[in-house]
Every structure is written in C-alpha cells, then in structure tokens.
Amino acid sequence: MRLYSTKNTSKFVSLKTALFKGLPEDNGLYMPECIPQLPAVFFQNLKDYSFQEIGFEVCKALFWGAMPEKDIRKLIEKSITFPAPLVSLDEETRVLELFHGPSLAFKDFGARFMAQLMSYFNKNENRELVILVATSGDTGGAVAAGFYKTPGIKVVILYPSGKVSPLQEKQLTALGHNITALEIDGTFDDCQALVKKAFLDDELTERIRLSSANSINIARLIPQSFYYFEAYKQLKSYDKHVVFCTPSGNFGNITAGLFAKRMGLRVHQFIAATNVNDVVPEYLKSGIYSPRPSVRTISNAMDVGNPSNFARMMDMYGSTWNNFKKEISGYSFTDEETKAAMKEVFEKYGYVIDPHGAVGYLALQEYQAENKGTCGIVLETAHPSKFLDDVESILEKKVEVPERLAVLAEKKKVSVKMGTAFGEFKEWLAANKER
Image (cartoon, rainbow, N blue to C red; front, side, top):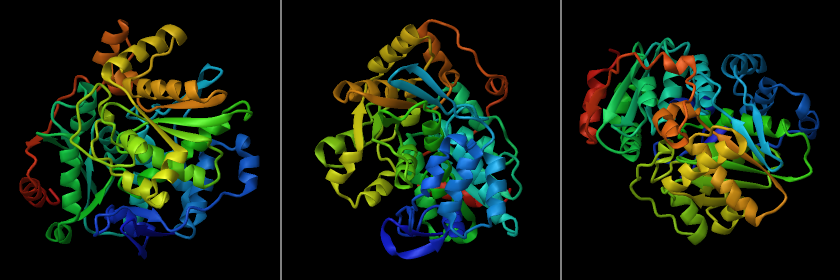
C-alpha cells in the first residue's frame, strides 16, 4: 500500500510511515494511491459475511502487501469486537447504531483499529510514541479507551474547555496512566490547529515521535468504512436506492463512506448533515468553501468550522464542485430544530436518539421529501446518555446510562489547563517528554 499527500500526488510513502507521521510535511492529508474495487463475489456473499470478515476483506484489498494476511486477521479480531446493528424505524428509515463500543461512540471503531495497528508497527521501536488528538467530544474518549495502557504509547488529548458534555469530559480526564488531557481555553478548531502545528514543527518532531489519532490519520478512516458494508448487509432487500445520512463535523465519517462506495458498495447518495456549523452544506450550494470559527451547539461533536477531511473529499472529486455535489447532498439545522426532531423520533417511534443522530434524521427527512422511494440509513454516532442533561431535559424522561459510562461519573477529573498559543503547547510537550 502506497499513499500520497493531497498536496503532492507524485510522492509516495508506506502505510507505516503514513500511520506514524499522521500529517505530511506539506500540511496535506494522506490518501491511498489506489482505492481498489472489491471482487463481485464479495458482494454476492455479503449477507453471509460476519462483521470481522467484512473488515478483513476490505483491509486485505486496501493494504495490498503492507501486512501478511494472518496479521490482518489478528488486527481485525482484536479491534472489531462489538456490533453495529441496523434498527428499523419505518419502511424508509433505518438507524445504524455505532455506539456499542467501550466509549459509546462510532469513533471506537477507528480508535481500537488504530491502536492495534500502531502497536503492531511499533513493537520494535525503542522510543516512546506520543499520540496527539484534538477532540470536540467523542474522538478523545474513543482514543483514550482504545490506547489505554498500550505499551510504548502516550496519548495527549486536547479539548475545548466548557464545550464537551460532563460525561464526555470524564472519559478524557479520568483514566490517567498513559492518557493526559489538556483543557484548552478556546474552540475545537484551536485544539486542531495546535495539533497540526506540532506536526509541522521540525524541532519538535526531531525530539519527539509524534503521531495523530484524529481523522487526519488515514488509519482512522479505514475501519469506519467497514460499517457501511455492515449496514448494507443487514438490509432485507435491495429494491430501493440506498442513501446514507452521516452527521458530520470533521467529515472523516462520510469520507470513509466514500471509500466504501469507491470499493464497490452500491450507495445512491450520501447526505452530509450538520448543525449551524454548515461550511460544507454551504459549499454544496454555492461552490465556495469558506471556513469560519465554530459555533457551540448541543450536537457538540459536530462543532467544527474548518473540517480537516474536506481536503480528502476534494482530492477524490478532483476539486470539481459539480462532481462533489452529484454524490453528496448537504443540510444544516439549528438547535431548536434538533430538539424538535429528538421529540418527534421518541414520540413517533419510541426511539431515543442523541442530538447528532437527530440532525441526521432531519437531513434524511428533508432529502426523502424531495427524493421518494429511497431507503435511508441514519448513522447514530453516539449513545444518548453521553448527552444526558440535554436528552433528559428535551424528552422529559430518564435515560439509562450504560455501566461503562456511569462508573466514570464518580471519578476525579484531572486536566492541564492551557491557552491557545502554540509556544505554550510546544513547551509543555518538550517538558513532558517520556514522563
């Protein structure tokens, strides 16, 4: 497997290099040289494959010599250990539940896969690897759970102070051991900017082995493509056009879906659903990409004003607006609309949906009003209990908190408070090297 930077398509690196570097020197993003088509027999037998078998077949095709097949199987067996069930709301609306992993968010798939892949390639290294990750909510918890107590790897999580839910914050700050949380006095975009600057600082990267677990790292996206195939497998019939509606912040999740389509999955349309941080839906309307500071909402994991993976999406479409909008539709919604949708889903179907899934539900409803006869799948990206106060207040009912999240409530929060200046962050990293 060879990968190139979205800013330099003629220079290639190995999977191992892309995995550990995270970000190319030119500030582009790594992309596979080739996204291969899976063979026809794979789709003919899709209903008979287990989730792990799907992951193995996708990785075998993508990795193409980067790892022996027996090691790919072990990687999948250790990382894909929980389901992604498809729940039917009605004839045209399904919900893909991606919250059955340890941190109750879809990012568990990418984080656990990446932890196993990094552990595999890191086993002969004698220097500590420092994983930097910026989070608007769910990424940090998933990475913390996925890398917890992994030998030779330290995780530093940057999160915006006061802009994640209380239980999300505990997932970042209460584990300890090899997990450190930096509480940044700013927005998610500020956190993301600090991480990117660290990778582009030659002095820092010379002294410290840095890598990233954000969706800027290609290894995060690969396993997220698995559950698009898994969702399709669970459909009872294929007599309608299948559309996937993906609540989107940094747009890694929908990019993984585009990978699945390039590999042959029959997806009629992707729907990018956002809150008022609607940079990509606005681009789809106007052809003008205009990033801006993010705005805080109740669907906080989507509070991103400059989505990193937009560069990958543009690379896939040759930077052509017409090609882009043929496969992706975009919609955005306010908090008030989101709250109303949460109530509607509960009252109509008896289903408790989280704020992010509710944004997806709204987008699918709007798309299907204009495109009759489609089968819509909304990606439910996090368990509603992660947003307990909001969900219980909106629905006026108690929400059960799974034990693996409930146990964190009583644990002590431990974080390092920090501003948005890169110099302060760089100095802290250097001072805490291998501590």
